[in-house]
Image (cartoon, rainbow, N blue to C red):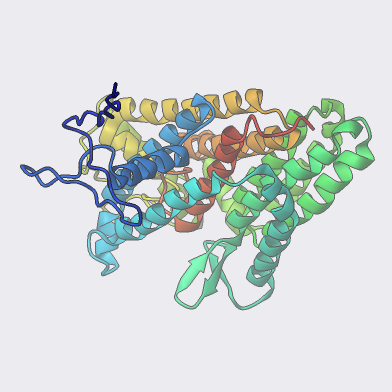
Length: 432
């Protein structure tokens, strides 16, 4: 009796299956006869999916605080570009740069600054610890070139710009970035000695105060006040007792008063703020009253809803620094009270994002640096708006993320990128 050998059935072929390929031969991605597209499951499709996965990881954030801070920042930058275009068109044309000269310059810095902010946001905390000292020393050396060499450029009584060929930058803005990183690093090392003034005040006001003093030599008292606020803000948020800050605060106020009284230009601004001589039509003091007076008129002209975007009359050579120190006046004139409130609301939202990041930070370095950046940006915004509203005398500080100024925009975006890096690595940072 013979037995029939069992038959081996071939696997069923489904429409989406591929034919078996002999060993040593590669299978090319199969394409549809009708459309010519690569079929699902092929190597080409897998590669495309891999690219999408890597891009997704690139922009993945650990918490929603990342998107809150990033979204608010991008809104203010875009809004600032629109307002720089509107406020700088006339002056740019008079300078033979065309109506779009100002916005093109600012746009280039924004196009470089935003990707740079995203790159900075991917750097780990260990990187900021390593570069804290080199960054502070380098920025201070650049500031020394401003105040002690012919490369420094003086504008309106402030020697605060460094001229390198056809390019100018403000090393004081670089010092701000280096200072917030350095403060986070040094205070994280001293967190167990908060009650010992020798370990807290001497390094902060010795090294950090020395960096501020270099800017003070150049005469930029407005920037010095912002940087002093960064120092005191970092000490406050790290937990130093207020009684320890009393004497340094009084000493700093005394130095600021002496510097202000020793400069004729600053005394002119102070007297104009107090209203002395503003009714006169001639003289240096009446010239100092021109800018705050026309800034107030621009705000009053805007009313509730404004005269319309691009329809400002103050920017027609009536308001100096319309695209920089007094851009908030142009916002109030063209967009009215509604536009001014929106700007204030966005800075409040920005402060809220910083506070949320501070509360979620597991590391003293991250918490202190975030606090210092918040004091810098929000404090400077309040000072700028206060100057336009007549609450403070003219100090010459721009509105962060909105005013024209390439160095200021770049450094502010880098500082925000540093804070964004803390939100990305919030679960990777050790509790120290």
